Length: 128
Image 1 (cartoon, one colour):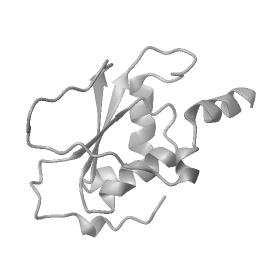
Image 2 (cartoon, one colour):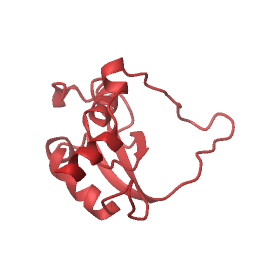
Image 3 (cartoon, rainbow, N blue to C red):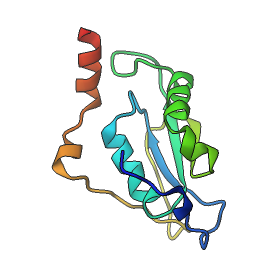
Image 4 (cartoon, rainbow, N blue to C red):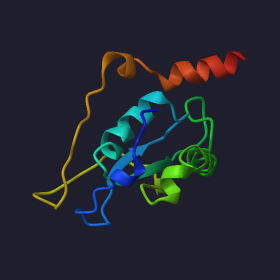
């Protein structure tokens, strides 16, 4: 994990606004950490939304279990108000209208982060 300076919170922004990341987080891995670090490094707050999906071969953990794991791993950031973890229903799409008051940003990771695969991680866990 990159060193994030908690004191770098951008206090000029609305304290109620967050950068939203939606995912299954099955499991949370270094690629996910890199992604949220992009906003934390800018001093922005992050909201991690866990899609509440049924357990199956690709989703080993319930949304409650994922939330517990994330809250343990990210406790330092949660305690200072930099990260909030929530659950949302499973979604089929994200839809917007015209200028709705927020940006839609794609973060392009370096190749070594892009190549991280939760499926490969789950397969390694399965083989243990």
